Image (tube, rainbow, N blue to C red):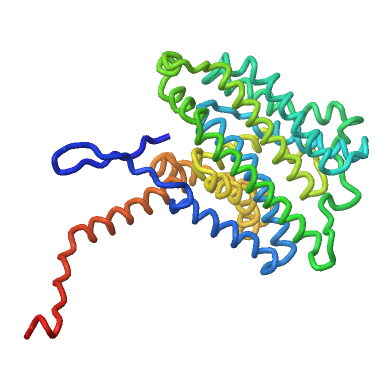
Length: 362
């Protein structure tokens, strides 16, 4: 986290830091307006559009979990797509085979995600760096193979489907698509609020020390391995949550949805949207959902998939070269520049001459 800005008087003496309450920051009110618009969306668009927006919200939770791991914790994972799929399969099989209610199945997916995160994270955080990336990419490559290998349990190529919508509308005034979208939107908002509070407290400052250097973090009393393991588990839990919600929105899970490319796509979405921004997670998820559809409208057939990958690669390259903090970071810098220019213009504007009254003229 960045330190508060300290203003100095002309004499050089430092004044109190400029710390504003959260509700007085532009980011807070931008988020409030965005949520208000998102709540109004289901009454303005079609059910098909709501289906796609629900997919965006579910994928955004997965990308946000990767932002927490990569952008804030400094760990690189190429297996987040596998954890995303594990959450989807855990929730769907709990409903299909165990006949658990949807919300209980969602909790089951969260528990499985925590277990997977602990089992993988325990050796992973000790390896770190390049070795961590290799371990997670192996897991992502093996996951669809295991789904086919244990087809009697996972459904194989047919996958697992739901007989009814996971989030049926409780009232006739809302369609199933509208209600499902509102439920998924609520879960996304709660997830982002949780993550924002998580990185804004003492743990956030500890993560800043870890990113600055292990020696600096240890010298300040930070247990690096324990903290990294905690965030790896939290990231896995959120990825499994996003995968379960995504499966509920689609109504099925199949192995083809979770290839190795999907894990890489989530990482690209995190970098392009902004790995240290929750709004960036939503922007990256929108690219994941809408880019293949746009590519298929330009080039029909199997070639559309290659076009989508090409666009992903080009956008990633531009972000690495031009905007290393992603689209959200570039937008934030642009807004800060505009605000600074306006503030300087107000400071250098000539003072307004005092008004004179008729009595003063006499």
